[in-house]
Length: 343
Ligand code: NAP
Image (cartoon, rainbow, N blue to C red; front, side, top):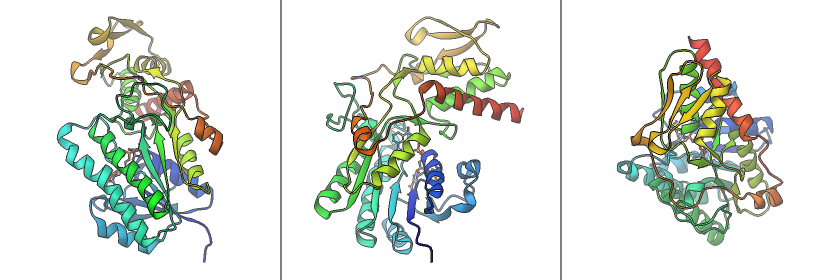
């Protein structure tokens, strides 16, 4: 029998699930990847990393308790990484019941099941910078007051405090990573970084006319997903469970992201106008290739979301290795190659 550690990853079909699985396999773990039962066995992100055959795919539905309990009894993992969530902060308010059920109550079901089925298992919970919402101070650290402003952030806050309760009153090894935005070529197309890379690549090969965005002056603390899954693992190797901000500590605007991607795609953008009237024109062709769509436009509220990861640096020895400039090139080159290959 193998004496390698067993890790269960929920959200295996997502961006972080794929990178974390690859990282744990590289460390000799037996990896159980939990996907929703409704899904067929196609797992494109694992395929893309070439690791589908090495991951034991299992079913999990966070909306229902007994299947989670049964799965944990069968697998008896040493480590559980809960990455599953309705993970889009911008999901419309009328989806708030679903968001609360998956992203909040789903964690309640998972923790209760783990406490019963495998109480020694160490648990990582993917928390989020959206916990800080409209906070007044920047940068944020583990002591900054939480003021979530979305159903997603509120559901994640419930999960965060419930985990603290299991840690303090039940002695569970529960740790939260307060994750700031982290991107990659595997990022979902609904997120702004990936929307920019796919659509500018399409524009550069003549498959699309224009990229429509919201507030170009919005700033984000953007990191590279493979760096962040390393911190998740490090957190579960500590004797004491704890919560850590995981962030780069540097922010860049959506406009800067667009400029970097445009360069890789051979486009040279000149900006005109501000706010809702801002637009980007390709200097070579004179064509408008970026415009603001008022439906996507949000004024920034509160202080800038920018993470102070000093605690992770001091206690875990973690800091992100990939710069913003490198991240933009990695993502842009991947999508440019994909559109060129398909055209
Ligand atoms: P993602 O790509 O959106 O993946 C989310 C995963 O959750 C998917 O595998 C999805 O499965 C699964 N899921 C959704 N509903 C489920 C349900 N009812 N039961 C079981 N599984 C369900 O997210 P990600 O970018 O990898 O992020 C990983 C985690 O980190 C998420 O919890 C996210 O909220 C958190 N986070 C991410 C970032 C970031 O910048 N990436 C920042 C802060 C926090 P399907 O494929 O079937 O939909």
